[in-house]
Amino acid sequence: MVEWTEFERDTIKDIFSKIDYDVVGPAALTRCLVVYPWTRRYFGNFGALYNAEAIMGNEMVANHGKKVLHGLDRAVKNMDHIKESYCELSQLHSDQFHVDPDNFRLLADCLAIAIATQWGSAFTPDIQAAFQKFLSVVVFSLGSQYH
Amino acid sequence: MNDDCNDGDDDADDDDDDDDDDDDDNCSLESNYLNVNMSLSSKQKATVKDFFSKMSTRSDDIGAEALSRLVAVYPQTKSYFSHWKDASPGSAPVRKHGITIMGGVYDAVGKIDDLKGGLLSLSELHAFMLRVDPVNFKLLAHCMLVCMSMIFPEEFTPQVHVAVDKFLAQLALALAEKYR
Image (cartoon, rainbow over all chains, first blue to last red; front, top):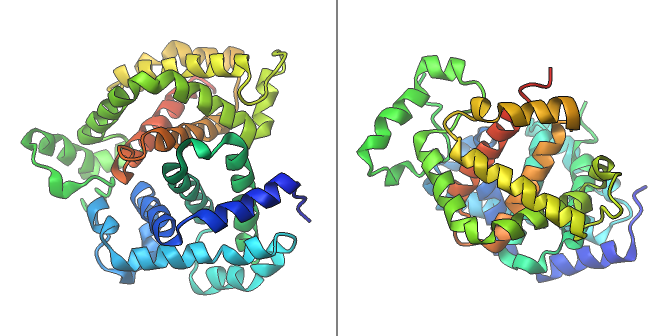
């Protein structure tokens, strides 16, 4: 089981209570699709994704970004049982969506950068460390049911 | 196939005719085969130079902050600094060394057309003396990107992000060139 300090627990709850899901979600997914273009392979039915401008203006991308960010809520609410919380979603990503789990790590990095653009210096090294630790647990959990 | 030109560039804004030939070169079948290390287009090189020039007044801060974040977020990286009295985030030796590293990155921007050649001696240093596991170059690059996005949220657009990320990856490859 993952051990969390009080600072880490407070930080995660704080981050997710303060961020604007409608901004950060789309920003993170957009960056992922632009910076790591191979990730577009999973969104064949999203319409125009052929360059940065198209991606940044794509409504399906924006909506999906919000959805994905809300997908983290269950981990925030259940920090002591993150792996169990993602059992089903992990199976789904493996058996239905066939997503290479390395992509979860890429999206996590983009999420950190998206929050950094919003928070500036308020995104301190300690907060970044807690956030990335949290994300790495989610990333691990999402990959846990692959076979 | 020439359709894999998805370098994240804002092609719709490609008004500069001079760029077109270079972009074609990078997307030709031959270069796709030879340039398997995802080299920068001339437009991306220009984007990198432009952004680093904008950043120059804050480059020390970014370097110091990036190395601080490396040891904070990835504590195992402190293993390379066991000879320092204090390798904690924000400490004087960490900040000073971050500035040194950033100076090296800026130097590399100037050598962007031939990173392998230009960074030969630095590569030898990292290979034979420092022996830093190359995986850490990626970790530090990520921390640099976080700092850039914190300090320049407007300028660090997705297009700039991809160009800088590619540049830092190329830089890491050049640094690891002499490893084995």
